Length: 338
Image (tube, rainbow, N blue to C red; front, side, top):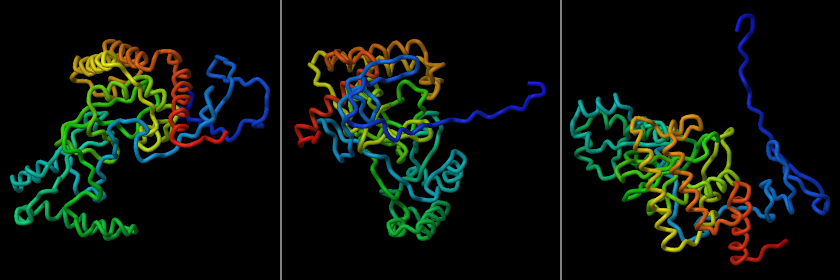
């Protein structure tokens, strides 16, 4: 623009500290964009639902597979490799190839970026000593950990061939990125083979099947996520202890399970129609392909039906209904003081 300076846009974030007197009997109103609705009660999640606090829990509230955070290298970057570094190691000693595994964090998962790591869990010492470049990296890991101010990290210096924390599944597993853009209607999820090493920037469900994928990828779970998740700037932080472990799953019939599985597979099949597209593009609001959008709409429909449909039309209704269900389940665990 002639004569005008280009001004950077800034993001404004608001935190609501309080509302009003708890015993205020005046009419309660919820404003959402340009719409207004009258509420019976406005809880701390700003929805018309019971007053609840979703607390951390170490295990799922429902009978579902456990979720864990991926493996944390704590290595100073010396166990991680880009394409060039990987090729240099193999060129120096072809034996190194057996210890190089695909490595994936949220960035690599969403943008299909190749990355690698040295996975030396079962490496034999006499073989490692034959690989000079790998031995140099191992020594650098040891030095990095010794310099840490954390006692636990210093302790890991005694095993520099291993990641600081290892939580790698032994079979195929479901991947959910820890951080995702708030612009996406759905957080992209997918299955990974056991030889792909996932970092602590991913959440993993090792015993998940296509049914679990379907429910988690549905708008019902996405609505719960948007209401209860933490934030990284304006993006979403997907947590295990608060978000996943407190999510109330449906109680479907065998027929409903079959429909969810079929619809979930249709989502995966729709992605395959665009093999050259990364997940970040497939799930961007302006570039999501129509086939994928339609598959998700169908998945949302059958998952809602598994909950009984009533009270699951809009996201606000979904959140309110899930919170009522959550209160009922928690109430059976322990009394809730009003």
